[in-house]
Image 1 (cartoon, helix red, strand yellow):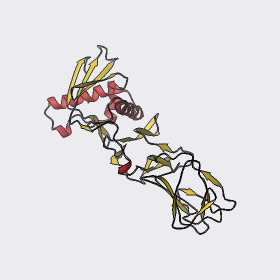
Image 2 (cartoon, rainbow, N blue to C red):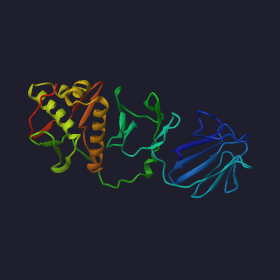
Image 3 (cartoon, one colour):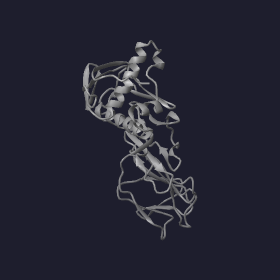
Image 4 (spheres, rainbow, N blue to C red):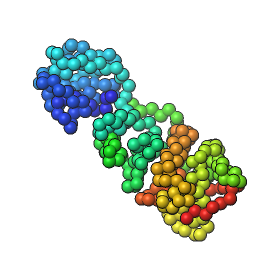
Length: 300
């Protein structure tokens, strides 16, 4: 899987693909994504060959599908370029035995059944890492994961000139209305969003009950006159006791809600966060909340 700038060579730690042939230079050749596609640039002593034609040091050639590439020539292994599509933003496994992960919208690490770390993209294209340590924006090369499962974040975004806006101009929404409908026994919770007078029905989901508890806490703090910045915060341990869930199951439900939101909303709408987190706490960030039905149980 090629990165946007991909180094082939013998130097462990710097080469994206390490080659062991003795004819290979420490930094042998680069394959790079540009405005017009993939290019190979040689920087070696013994040369690189594309379809058996040598690419001399300091020169570069444009690659096309099914090109045969040999680093070092002679009896070196042949590599075939199978796909000339643009590079993708990825998590490259550092820990042995883990898969590389292509990032599209949201992913849980180390897995969806144990989401200790959540990585997702904001509407403006920034990648966010959220964990017990807090929330941060990812930079190219950052390490993410947990102690025994670590990946490296590699952002491979095509150059600005190659990007197209398929969904028209972006729509910035400063606030939304959230509408909960709760059955009398509180076993069923449905949720709707009103965005720019458009209603988006998220229907009934198990994780909406967690959203309901967070929303009730936010409303309670609003009624008590708390400052906006301090409204609605609940400690994860308190939330766990209230719901009878451990932290892992809370994280799973938050992950599922975020994933549902990403899939349900039009891609050109920039929404504020509905769930915010800080060390050991979380809250329902939407200010405009309507709840019908149910029997409220006050959050701690």
